[in-house]
Image (cartoon, rainbow, N blue to C red; front, side, top):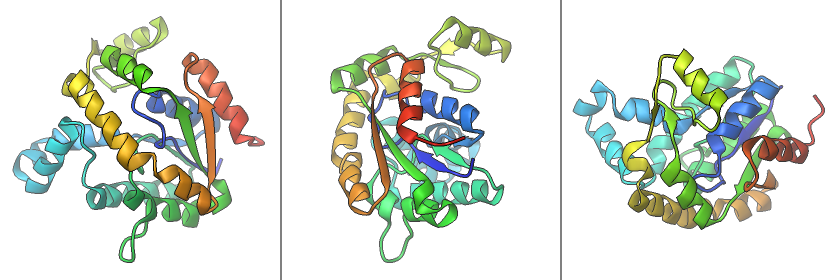
Length: 229
């Protein structure tokens, strides 16, 4: 299906990565997870020598958002690559700021990039609503597979991780209370304001309850999208 879905107007711990994986399988989309992409890039040998990557590594590990101009370029490049494959996509980590979303007089924002590539009517921004207490609880308890970074929520997820040769692990500094609180602050100040402007500019903005179990949240998203497969 030739659509573009972004889940990034959702707060930390809302289940963006889990729902993106489910949507990718359901609609045959490519899932671009900015967080996993950055984690791999910023912990590579290249990052040890590159001053820009070292700067972004510090931002990433302390809960601050990466530099908007830098991450916009990284994400836009990946979105364009996916579109050239004639595939739809789902994003779970971009865009996260007004600048990344709308750009400026010099840089094209990711919203317009997706609209140009997929048609504005085929671009969806989905907010999975959870409160701050749930965010703190979910992130502090989160366990992921050491191979692919996918959250381990069920026995099936655990078996999948073992088949890959991995083990469950915490995400280290990213999921400590101090960093989680910083990520919540960053979300409230820099991501949440995107919602009203996206609506003002005529983008499809959908909101679903993120408190139920992941399969139930997934069904709520499918219902909200109202897509005829």
